[in-house]
Image 1 (spheres, rainbow, N blue to C red):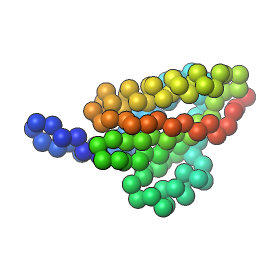
Image 2 (cartoon, helix red, strand yellow; image 1 turned 90 degrees about the vertical axis):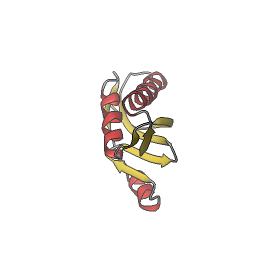
Image 3 (spheres, rainbow, N blue to C red; image 1 turned 180 degrees about the vertical axis):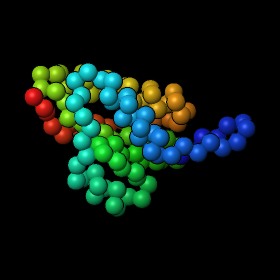
Length: 114
């Protein structure tokens, strides 16, 4: 991903964006872990604008990114509330640290852990 400033271009690796997303998810109470599933790997194989690593998939669209996360949540949490907090934190963290606009943060709840 590139950010263009007055002084020139800044290239930010998708790995950096993924790390920021992972750290933001770890801060949310009720999320046990990120979980990679087979469908994410298959999607990356067919879509060259996508980067995937353990539970985080990034798709570049011009100057914006789409973030897809697969998570496992703690049993007893109110899933919509937890997921909304994850979406807000991930979007805010990526935009604040990279100045890259996050178009969408999609969350896939892959499991519940007791």
